[in-house]
Image (cartoon, rainbow, N blue to C red):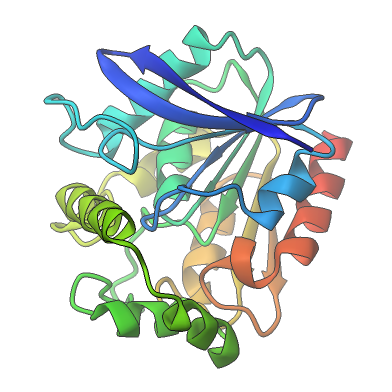
Length: 258
């Protein structure tokens, strides 16, 4: 399905949005690597849904507003964006940092949400389960550690980024650090409020996630009433790139039932 790119100004922030397909609206929130391109996974999902992929404030082609201090700010921003785009009864999904943002949206206001999907989401802290410290990894280490299959990582590393792409990478890393440096990629209070989520919730994790190991997915499943956890075998942190077809099929079945 063809997609188009547009800009919306919300809370004074000019925000880049990719949108394609038709059907029920599905708002997809990206992770720390950003959302600069229309991925094969997006193409597949747009065949069944009106897929909306914004770049968070502070990332990629979107502005970096003065008011952006934490993930809670992004949660309120997206509640405003949902209102601006007039998206009643939407499906909400997020990966990694985007999953954390999605969970923060849902605990605040889920009146417009039809479902919630969390993919290898940040946001929680387990004292006995170490996270991967993405801020300390080199660019090569980061790329190798987010995939299970070393061939996928090698293919990514073989690509030579342009100066513009490197500038976007730096911008994204800076904003990710601002949002998740201390404490490291979690909200100490989030676990107390996940019980407020009552919409059907799908949680998907890779069994070889080196950023947020599988126990984090199991923790989300225990804290969100009635939620469903699916584990993809031989998969790392970046599900939408490493397992696009399997993930799309899993999500489509879940969303169609709800």
